[in-house]
Every structure is written in C-alpha cells, then in structure tokens.
Image (cartoon, rainbow, N blue to C red; front, side, top):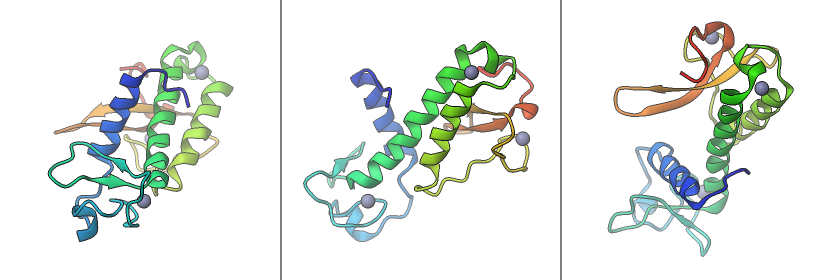
Length: 156
Ligand SMILES: [Zn+2]
Ligand SMILES: [Zn+2]
Ligand SMILES: [Zn+2]
C-alpha cells in the first residue's frame, strides 16, 4: 500500500463510498445495521461510508478493504505509467506489468471485470494494457485500455 498522506486516504474513502456502493440495498444495510456489500451484521470494526445520513452507511472491514485495495493499486499503476519512459513509449516494462498484476488480483474478489474502454476485446495477460481515466456524463471513470487502442499520450 502506498497511500502516504491522510488526505489521499480520505479521497479514496470518498471514491469507494460514492462509486462502489450498490444502488439497491437490503433493509438492514439501509438501517445502518449491516454491511452494504455482504449484508453481514455490522460489528465494532465496521467502516462508516460517506456521506452518512441520519442512519450510517456501514461496511465490514473485509468488504471495505478489498474495494480500497482496488483503488490503491489502480492509482499506483497509473502513477507509474505517467512517469515511466518505457511505459510512455509503449515498451515492455516489468514494473508497470507488476503493478498491473497486483491491481488485477484485487479485481477478482469484488467481481470487477476489467475491459478495454475502446474495444470489446478482452484484456489478455500477454497484451500491453494501460490504466486510463476518463470523464463520463456525470462522473469520471477509472479503467483500462489496450495500448494499441490508445491514440493519445497515456496521461491525457
Ligand atoms: Zn461486507
Ligand atoms: Zn513502466
Ligand atoms: Zn482495446
């Protein structure tokens, strides 16, 4: 984990809270008594998501950390690609690949299906892939693209 400052952790906490909570929640989760993801009863180490209304939105530590890990590893990978000459030139880079592998491991337990933003083909382990951030109609998205599908500079 490479989160170095409290502000960064607070930002990631907001992203997990805003973007990862399901739209439809069971009654116990709406009542602030169960995890919003697995619906297990909230315990003493449950994490309070933001914004919490009258009734808190809670997450069990296991569900919360597995989603936080997805964001942390995505940003670690992205931060590397932005400053790495080899990645920018679309050459094979073992550091970049290592960060991709670490990130992809975090996607499995939370059922995220990595796909290319530009084409429908799957992201194969043998292909060069970059993390990309793009603006949607109401929010930004974090995702991936095959390097062959990216036309501009990667950090665009
Ligand atoms: Zn849970
Ligand atoms: Zn690199
Ligand atoms: Zn593609």
